[in-house]
Length: 100
Image (cartoon, rainbow, N blue to C red; front, side, top):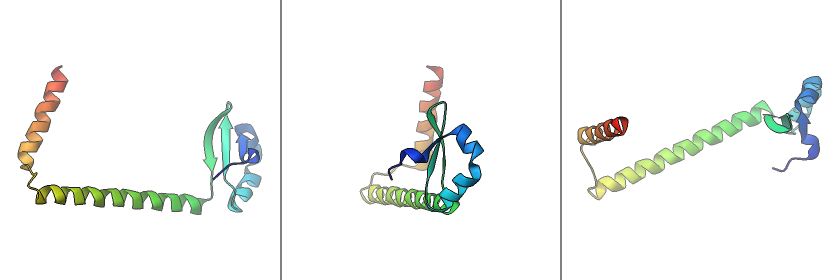
């Protein structure tokens, strides 16, 4: 989504006009608030934020499903190790790094 120049607002202006900004956001706009000339925060509708969070959870679930599929493929190909052996190897590597 492209932002218009009117969607970028200095922090001091946002503080002074918060009610008006909230109404614009509720009507569908998204605002970027700047501080010292740099992007600082965004003001978006709460429902849109909830939607973004749901999308992120779905993405995480898809990644987990993909990882599980890879694990099943490894198991089917016989590329498995005993969990205790794998954990011991990890602990040894960490111990070596800690002493280095």
